[in-house]
Amino acid sequence: MNNQKFSVISDTSNYWLKNAHVPVCLIETDSEISSQTREGLSLVNIEIREGVITQIVHSSKGLPSTGDIPTVDLQGGMVWPCFVDMHTHLDKGHIWERSPNLDGSFNGALDAGARDAGKYWNAEDIYRRMEFGLKCSYAHGTKAIRTHLDCFGEEVNIGLEVFQTLQKEWEGRLILQPVSLVSGDYYLTEAGEKLADKIADIGGILGAVPFMSSDVDNELDKLFSLAKERQLDLDLHTDENGDPNSRVLHKVAKKAISHQFSGKIICGHCCSLAVQTPEKVTETLELVKEAGISIVSLPMCNLYLQNRQDNYTPRWRGVTLLHELKKQGISVAIASDNCRDPFFGFGDHDVLEVFNMSVRIAHLDMPYGDWPNAVTKTPADLIGLPNIGRIRVGLDADLILFKGRNFSELLSRSQHDRVLLRNGRVIDTTLPDYCELDSLFE
Image 1: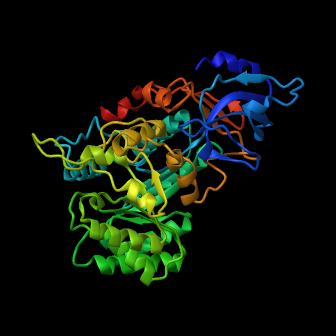
Image 2: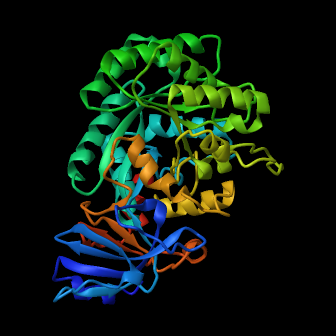
Image 3: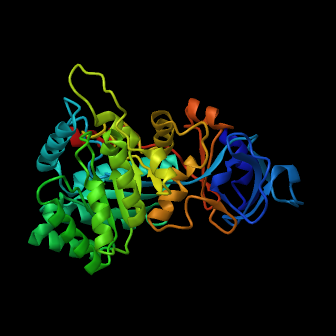
């Protein structure tokens, strides 16, 4: 987008954005917003004063008397609230060049990641890679990030300390939330209990990767007990595989009900649902709904890893049952997951790319409906940020202005010329150069 037109507001904090196409699902207003397009967009004018949204009116009503307030005509370009990326792995990011996953498999990713951590991970290494990821996220329009952090052994001290440093340094620009990442059996140990205490101390979320095993019920009982005792929410990796017999999500839901767990529960991936029988799927979804569990899908990473075999074309897309979950009334969000590491060799921390790819992978178009919520409003609500990820009078003018005037334009051509407003001000969207990381790979 030509930023020159925004020079008229560089010296003022009061102005109108005129002729903005906004997904109606992202607008919260008492005023009637009518005349939607077939894609669920509405053409509106948005008033911003002192960095806050003060009016949202349909463009057909014209502009109220603006006096000396300048107007920027977006000519139908789309406007979104800032993104919420609720499932990432910032501590693993950008290690692909030194630790690639040579066979592209899930086990290959686990092995490459573990080798990299053992050889290279120290405070400086983790800090620089995480900071690089935050710079990318911020420049692309993300406002809040939840990241899973490896917390085995000494990694818990290094990773969480680096996270807390960055959390403080980025305060006011990015909201950062930490989730512990260990296998489910780790919480059966004394170290696991200490980790739960540590997570409680820093205001984090208790996370784990429970696998189907003879001891999974004990692991889940312990996990729920630790979370209840410390009043922690749960964010779990479940069934990240194509095994129809992997039913950890089903077990988590049953345990949540039996423990009468009142905290929030997020389950990520849930890939195996897509290869289970309709009867098993129905049984699991009913329990998930009853337990109040929400699901976050990671379509790019799952497409990359799942069903990969040598000289074999994958027969399924790896993603969970997004449409069926949503139809059941279960909250569903989408996030980026890994970035340029053994679990996903690509990515740039751009949630628009995540949404773009998800639309293609999971058929989130025809109609688009309220799927834009999956990377904005829904994840914001799920991670406890009810004033983010939506456009509403009284909220900060944290907006993304795209040149694309409809979904076809938005998702067909690169939107790297997007303009970002934070508190109503245009911010620098220059991405960090990859050479910033070169010394980590020497």
